[in-house]
Amino acid sequence: MKIGIVCYPTFGGSGVVATELGKELALKGHQVHFITYTQPIRLDFFNENLFYHEVNISSYPLFQYPPYESALAGKMVDVVKYEKLDLLHVHYAIPHATSAFLAKQILKEEGIDIPVVTTLHGTDITVVGKDATYKPMVTFSINHSDGVTSVSDDLRKETFETFKITNEIEVIPNFVDLERFHKQKKDHFKKIICPEGEKLLVHISNFRKVKRIDDIIYTFGELKKQIPAKLLLIGDGPERPKMEKLCRELKLCDDIRFIGKLDAIEEVLSVADLFFMPSEKESFGLAALEAMACEVPVISTNAGGLPELVINGVNGFMSEVGDIADMTKNALFILADENLETFKTNALTRAKEFDIKNIVPQYEAYYRKIIAKVKGLKPELI
Ligand code: GMT
Image 1: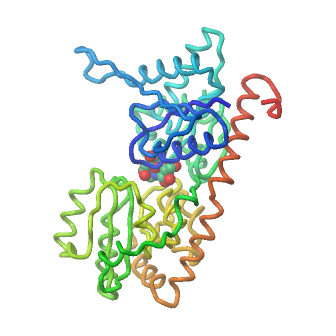
Image 2: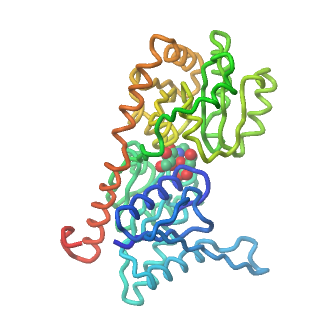
Image 3: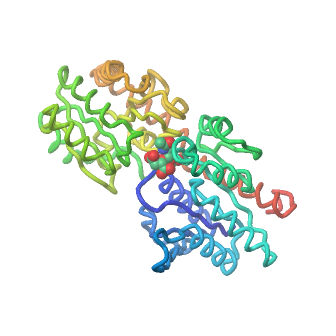
């Protein structure tokens, strides 16, 4: 198949999922065309089936806000037409599903009916999509996609609860590439960060409010009273300055390091003992899955789709949002010498259920189903 993938190319779960999906599809022999405003960060290798088309946004003195949706739709029209795509797969509803609808209508005028699949990732539904400004457009775009998937059952449920949905939504969970994300035998980094054999705790995110990083810092402060430990906060975003200030106020700067954005996260995860994800909302929790693949158990909230990933008392623990005392108690339990190895083994066992090799065929089958629906054919003929 020839597939066009539209996503946010910067750091963020939806872009990571879209890029990893595209790479795997290309390895399986499909032709994949990324349509984004800059090169996706994980599009880091050459393959004869991978193509990248940059959306050019020309400016004009009249535009205080350059019309990105129109530029994107225009690029989609161009790529579908000249690369003869079979399907467009857009990740994150805003504004990608809307631009795809526009592109589809334009192409129809030229006799091309391009099937459009929209994947809902999380905040496009649970945070931004709910905003009255975007809600009508999100509802319309979901209902007018030829196919819609969501990354967890919980997100599917919340989509039906939040919007007037007349379309079907299929759940295809996120996945992890176990060839990249596995425990590596490199411990020089751990020796530098934890010279006295301290336990190493890690969090990775885009440092948005929804991630509740202050809860991690407070939990760490409590935990530190009981055992020697270090905390690495990886990523960057709007909350970082406030979190740095909080560390200073709590006098935890010697034990907490802000690393910033990092590509080789698997190297850090390989030496971590615990991963924190205390989010207020989290449709899936891809970063937690990547941690589990590197044998790192997870302390999370029971928000959104996290219960579909974390098994309480097996590969981690879940607490109510903001329950610092419970998270501290659970973290200490996991980190106890007699428990840690079992939790680590269980984390990997669980991660294997989300192996990219098992999940990508679900997307391929779904693409066939949607192309067949649009073209009026049987899926086995695609
Ligand atoms: O909030 C983020 O981390 C970024 C956001 C995105 O769309 O880029 O992530 C969402 O999509 C990820 C991939 O499907 C999910 O793993 C995250 O759980 C989800 N984030 C939230 O729901 C807050």
